[in-house]
Image (cartoon, rainbow, N blue to C red; front, side, top):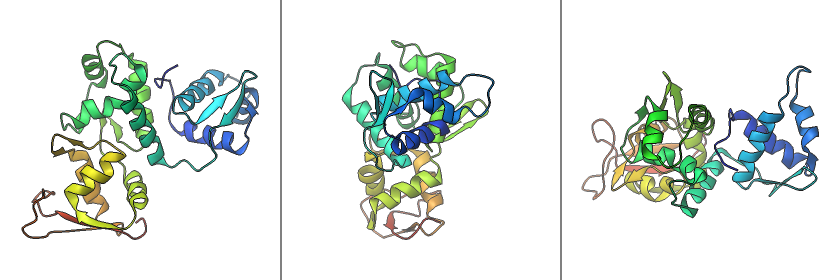
Length: 247
């Protein structure tokens, strides 16, 4: 089983919430809950989402095809990224499909500091040539990453600008904190979503945090003679204060 499932994104969270609400629900009952129209069959789509959630270790399925949540706590969007990071750290095998799925964002966007990739299918198979990833699975990866808030599908490619709602949730998780902006990237955010490589901060993450600073979730400022990097078009920000409610 692999994380490379033909999923669309929104069904993943919806199905997980249903399983948490009805522990032990039969797969057939789950299908009936989401089969809005009599024609067609969503069983394959349901199987894909369930396999995806099993690989994230959020659910388990017993021999009688009953589905159980691993825990019933609320799963926020950043939790998916924490789990993907754990999966990436558990393996470094370039032929392991789950390792590839969970590190594509890092290797194709963070390492080269490239915010937009037009032909993700070509780049993924060039980097992970021992696995072989179909165009259909690459497209599914893009849909899921967009749903998880890591970017947008644009002109057939992927634009890796983290969504503000994702960054808001991460800032709220960090809580009240004040310090160098570079430390926020390297020591706080990077523990949840990869955004740093060999001293360079990913531009997409920089843009997202600066945009977030235009609201009241965090406050950006400049301190003189600070031995850390400054960010922004004019290198005008090097200090950040977290706190407040989402904009």
